[in-house]
Length: 202
Image (cartoon, rainbow, N blue to C red; front, side):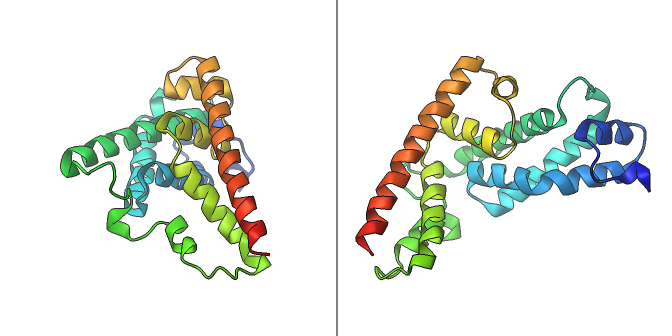
């Protein structure tokens, strides 16, 4: 049916949902659940916790649908909700575990993707280098300072503008741009180290 067209904009779908169209909400979930999960996963380093954030985020959308204004961008609203839930989850985790800073962040879920790939044979085939590079990039993202990682993920995963990110993280736009610049510099340095390593294997 035309009212359930999947190419409708997020704000139009949200307006339909506010009018009682459950199918419009289902399209919003289908469209955003994967990038939202990736955003939460990079924050929380736990698939279970990330899935819970996604579920809770969409539950908050349902509960607060009447608060959404059509002059706002749905993605910015959704990621503000998810960000706050991630912060709450990290705060509760810290209270429960009091874990040492030197202990791996993913302690309960085995080695990280970067650690697993680091154990591979030094005779890496050329076709495997892209996998290694992706693992190195993910590891580098995980190692970014929290504020830089957050801005990078909001920019790259949710495709928000710097102005929108500034509203989400409650910081001046110039501060957001600086965090993004520093994040990119760190990631470029990490990938530069990987390129030197990969050349040594050839």
